[in-house]
Length: 121
Image 1 (cartoon, rainbow, N blue to C red):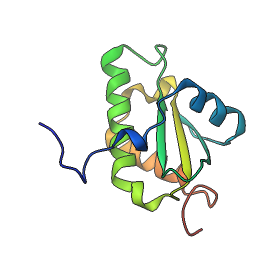
Image 2 (cartoon, helix red, strand yellow; image 1 turned 120 degrees about the horizontal axis):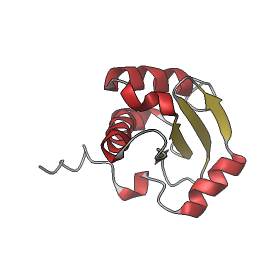
Image 3 (tube, rainbow, N blue to C red; image 1 turned 180 degrees about the vertical axis):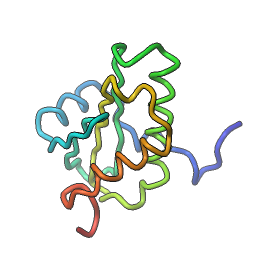
């Protein structure tokens, strides 16, 4: 089942290249929580973009893909609330393996409530 145009998270809204991930890791502001590390930084005005890293240490492919789907869904629903020139990299820690989707959303919302990562603050 495909999503309609407004519900999708297009490729332009994702960090895709290794260089983009590395640059953001070097230059971005880091925010920590119990289950995630979030790195945010400014891009060249291409719109808010998301990158997700879930290592094999977190779990098997089923677990890793579940975390990535839930983080993408969180970002997709709140994308319009982020500054249009913001890149966000979410790195899952091992403890994120058993989290419910709602808990993931609550935790990421708390991390991203920082004034430097939200629009209008």
